[in-house]
Length: 387
Ligand SMILES: *Cc1c(COP(=O)(O)O)cnc(C)c1O
Image (cartoon, rainbow, N blue to C red):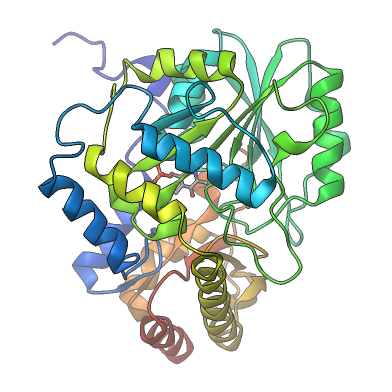
């Protein structure tokens, strides 16, 4: 091999994700892993059974149709109608993907030209920067700042240039738990229409909103129907993150564009799981409210524990993460803190700094996931307090 490194230049800045490092550390030290956001109990047993049944009945064991099985596309369209009053044609306006992750990648590869600018909230979900880079585009961060993490709409307006092609928005927002309000969404929609921008919305936490917060899809605002690609997935809503079933809803031309990129990434995935997810989406309202109530309780358990342990805490209105600040301990560097926390007290967390371009904005912030069994959260809280 010559002097040229194997990894191409656009990906050179992306090493191993922090989740791999921290999960390995959790394993090595036998720590409680509140780093990566996956539930430690599986989703509904009936839905797992539906996947087994699909395999036994020979449904989805061979390549399913490229856009997804009709049963799931219909269920996704029904879900958008049921929760948001949004009509979509299951044949032309719904696309099934390998989780939201593939939907985001396919949307970036399909909709962007090299040199296009993409505005996204930072802290970013970790795949955004890489997907924007793979498309040859340029990320423009809009920094969400503690304690409220509300977006600065004047700064957003100022960030739009003639090269801006797309807004990539995540609400409810991981890792801060910020949920965009109706007024903020209306202002963003107005700007998108005025500047003729596409918008890709990552709504994987759509059902995890608490207290007075409400999830309103940006696509429901005037002028947005034909410029918005909405993305969600089964992982967070149904606690089956390993199944990797996601979906896109958008106008037919936008779905066709995203499908063009998607067909050369995975082509198709998760055949039998698609049938099970069609059943999951049709679960009664009690499932959805139960999930939310359960996670709200877990949020409160971990919040109390973290406050007691001395963390400054930013109360999340959505998602299953709590962002904290470690300044009260006289510490400033979240990354160093998270690297030593497992040794110190047997708990793993994630430094928010890795989700920022601005090195100072999130330096002292640390994220904990609360999608864990109550007894695990209580034990984690006890360990943090002892230390
Ligand atoms: C978990 C997560 C995803 C990825 O979803 P998958 O369906 O597992 O691919 C995308 N965006 C955000 C903000 C997430 O937290």
